Length: 453
Image (cartoon, rainbow, N blue to C red; front, side):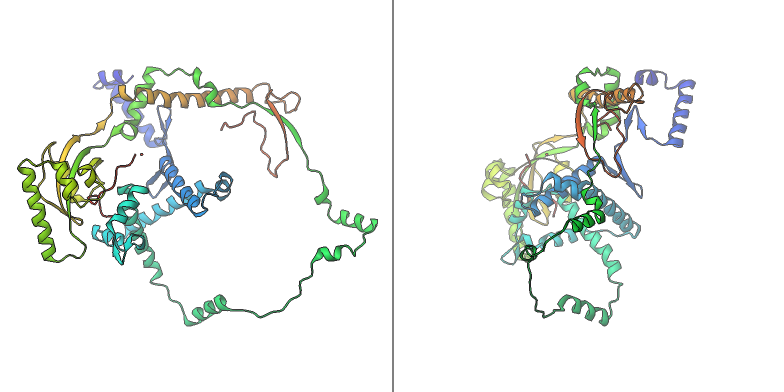
């Protein structure tokens, strides 16, 4: 089909077809293309929240609950707390705050992010910021880019909230009333009488029992029960029967190429860091620059980069590996470091690169341009995704066929479609039987060349 459209793209008929399709999209919106639904959970002020965003937020929130409950957080607790619903509410709140901050033209600079990170209590050691603690934190829990983005967003949201809070006036009377409520105490004396100690002295008559039963009939009423049978249409049971046409594979690939089958541009680099402490004097900075220039001279004279990195680099995350940072995409390192690394040819050295961490010498080992992966390399992945979707559609189709057939008009337990039977108590809004059950990154060690977070 795609080949046909390309071949005759200049014909009048095809142009008319394109016009009709465009009009349909304008009228009804692009809810689904090629049978694939757009994976959007919510849209807030034009910003979409995808299912992937919700899944990640839910996993993060659940991990925080698990840490707070120290291993006692069960699946039942997750359901009762509605973790997924809470995660969605938070995503919506964040989107609203971002929209309002954008409307007010509010932004957070890189310097503010650095200041916020270096003042975090958990990153202090002996009263000073510890870069090593930051490295441990990133290595154990965080993605570098996400950590910086989270700090930047927190600063922005705090600033936005302060716009509201700073304009709030609290009277002396309100302060006194709150203090009284928080510190008010009472001196009392009491006598505790245990009810079981008096129960032995009480004698109940038959009339007492009859009166109590008449006044509380609901407590002793046997709940209604039903016996039912059902058929479960599981997608996994019919998946082996699904055949995926080659045309659909190519169509699915084209539809999701940018979203799922495109690799980012990456470089594989090494670096040597000559660290400059926070608040260093000009003399200290000049000494660090002199040391870095001396190392650069040795490298240009043919020195072994890995050996010099192991001996002289101040980066605890990469020095032992000869300064190897592995592959990283754009957006993960500080702007100056990133610009230098992505502009170098493989095998070449940079001049000195200055960042908030100090002076870097960078060597690029490999540069991947990124871009869409060939269909051949993701063919099996596409087939698996399509087979899963078709299996779900097939299971639903079979369920609807049964709903519209012999079972639709027969609600009798004896003649319901065969399956498992069970007894259950009805809820105040018991669902009507529909003959169906269930239809319906190893991280590389962090480095001080990473963006200040």
